[in-house]
Length: 306
Image 1 (cartoon, rainbow, N blue to C red):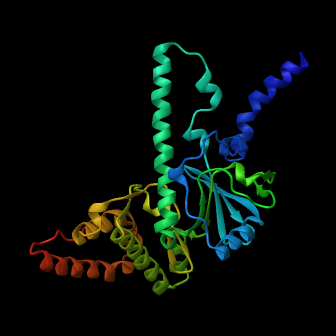
Image 2 (image 1 turned 135 degrees about the horizontal axis):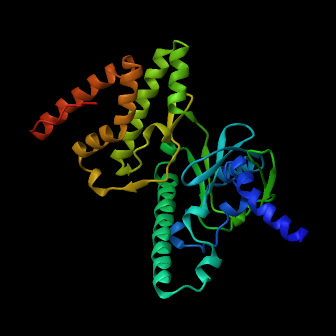
Image 3 (image 1 turned 180 degrees about the vertical axis):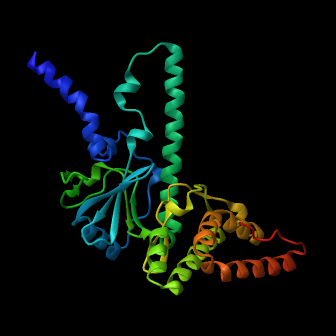
């Protein structure tokens, strides 16, 4: 009876413990995924590989979570280790083996296929970030297939201060440069009276998106203010989970321009409502570029409106 009560008690309290820990648990970053050739990336150069080894030798402290990953900051505060939230990306193996009536089985497999497509889209996005947009995203290493060899366990410290020793080769993960939240950094600079640096950051954010669009890549996530950060004055796209290749952008300056305005509209609106002095010159430059592009295309483009 005591054993049964203990199990019931644990089952009753476990969700609350998980919530206090921001939902993190080792089981949630573990997967039964099998390796896929499409998820492989080219090996790093020796110097870059040594850098990753040094980074992973540090302790990592819980930073936060997004829709796709749990994030841990390195002890030196320079890097982030991201581990995928597989509880949202795939059903556990036991659930797929559970006998179900035919109708429910069809629903289960349809849902499993949707989750598989979500994984493929997410992993492809991080592969793009590493191979083509490392400067823009700060992604310096990705391992989307298990099997990475590291000489010692990676130590994670969760929100409650508990330590977890990981054989990192058993997990899919991303290593990325750490950045301060974009709006938080702008607010800090404005409160300190450093308008020039704040204005530079806004301009760099716009330039980053334009540069990415010129390479043929779009971001389908509309949450711009949450997805970008700042390292010094460099803007980094910290959430790289919804990047897609759009071949039509490559040789179409008009679409590159329009897509840049579309993706940065949330930032420009936020700045205009709180700090209009940060975007005045930028909006003038956009209108000038609109005019120059209109002349080259022989037709008028829509003005920039927020």
